[in-house]
Amino acid sequence: MITVLGVLFLSCPLVHGHAQESETAAGSPLPGRAGDFALKIEPGLAIPLSRPQSQRFELGGGQTVKALWALSEQLDLGPSVTFMSLPSEVDSRESGTAWMFGGSLRLKRSHSVAPEGARAISPWADVDATYVRTGKLNRAGLAIAAGLALPIGRARAFWAGPFVRYQHIIQGTRAGFDNNDAKILSVGLSLEVGAGIRRARQPVAAAVAPPPAAPPAAPPAEVRIVEKEVCADRDADGIPDKVDHCPEVAGPMDSWGCPAYKKVVVTKEKLELKEKLYFDKNKAVIQKVSFPVLDELAQVLKENKSMRVRVEGHTSSEGSKEHNQTLSEERAQAVTDYLVAHGVEKDRLMPKGFGDTEPSDTNSTAEGRENNRMVSFVIVDGGSK
Image (cartoon, rainbow, N blue to C red; front, side, top):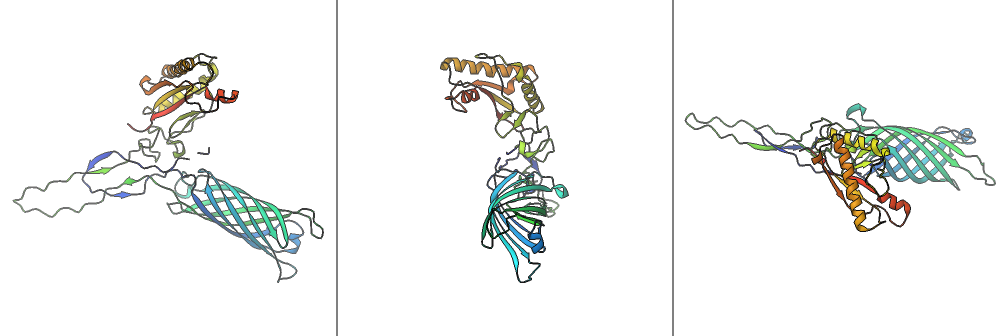
């Protein structure tokens, strides 16, 4: 999943204690944001694999620099430049050099939701499409790489680890030149600096020095009660209840604290179904093919008692406004009745019909009209009560 959540500002419930107020940023990690920037530097050894390069050149060196912007927590995109030099076996004063300019697409394990400690390794793989300049020749190239990155420090702004990259330089037919493709393997160390991770603020009480002893005749000193902030986390998944959509069931931050379900995806604002709900034509009768996804939706709601959902019915623009409004209300109510019959409390569901007033797609095509006939589930209250 390519999921974008943003920075969260938490306000925690207040409790009383005999302490002064103090804060630290050592809370739970929050998901990364689209647009975060990272710079990668990859020095390494260059090994020619193909002839005539493997016959003319010895083991050399290379350097790759990449500027990457996050499209999601797992996907990055940006420009890259590589310089490579291979010393000649024939003449030590000569060397084969190549400049490679292009764009890079990287898939990685999210830096913000990886476990703490030694297990916080982030495997990654990338692919580059490049323009290659070798001597007087301009050629196209392709590079594929894989590696491992380990964070340096709890802030996870710095990452380091081994990598291996295969470079393929495409040689067209040219008179006077060798017309074989060049193939080079690079092995080295990848060094990366990025935005790091943001953490939920978790307050900590500072120690208070004991008051000086009072004179024997003086009344006892008044004890000052100070409010301090505490972030509750009932399911101990590292996500505060004020943010956690499923505060009683453990789950990762990229699904807002909810476990991974097969047919339902929990987002910040909705419960999204991976399968469309089907009804009899122009009726509020749910077809049997939609029973399994509604059964799992009922399971999600029963596991998370604090979640309240608005069940929204929508239609296409075919038919009269009055008919569409009535049909959308009846379908929203039919879904609500199904969930209640399968164990969900009625007061946690709010059916509402919108008719054709809020289309999600165009009504000018058959596909668009089909997409507009739907029931959606908006989270009204998904945090701790």
